[in-house]
Length: 178
Image (cartoon, rainbow, N blue to C red; front, top):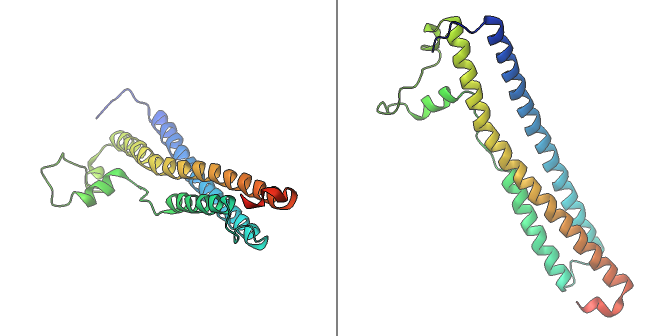
């Protein structure tokens, strides 16, 4: 693990960069939560609109489609909302899971093994740990993002169907039976 050619200042800069990237990942996760809240509010508003206008209460092809899309959309939003395990340190998390299971690849114990490192070894190990933590957490963020992307598309679909339903009922009376 030792590499005497790495400058201390370079290690510090790398550590700052990795911490900045992880902080950005936390911000991205918070933005996704905000977007999820906006989609919940939008869907609730659409459902309220359809209920108040009594469009959803009278059975038609449009109301059946709207109810189906709402069901799918709320499932997607709940999928995005599901609790996920976010990692702090890969070694801490893996050691908790592997207690008593010594035949697996040897893992470092924090802080015992880390305290035996030189400053350079410690920085290098922490950089490797932070990178692994970022990669594990990014999968969780990507899952939330994917669910919200699908939910956004379904919300747009609900809006189009609701507008077509509104136009059909109020402006084309012959098509009210659809």
